[in-house]
Length: 73
Image 1 (tube, rainbow, N blue to C red):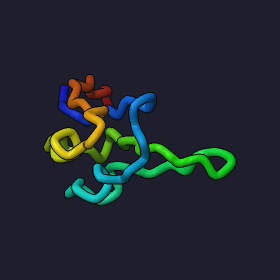
Image 2 (image 1 turned 45 degrees about the horizontal axis):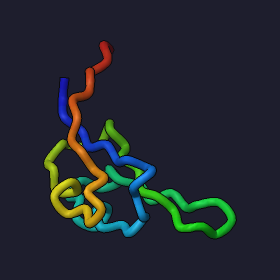
Image 3 (image 1 turned 90 degrees about the vertical axis):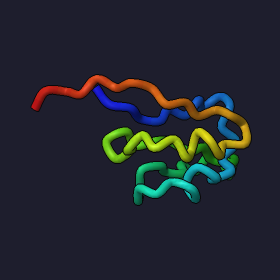
């Protein structure tokens, strides 16, 4: 088990604050919306180190750290 961030897509406003504060390269991706709508941010859990900086800095408080079951190799 390990900790990784989860972003509630219903609440995410695509401000990219989490992308800017994340110390792990490419752990959070900004995904463009359809038809020029504002995009959303999404965590790549395999890259997330669970530091919590994204959760602490999210202006909409839509990021939570959660336990993730590690898959067997």
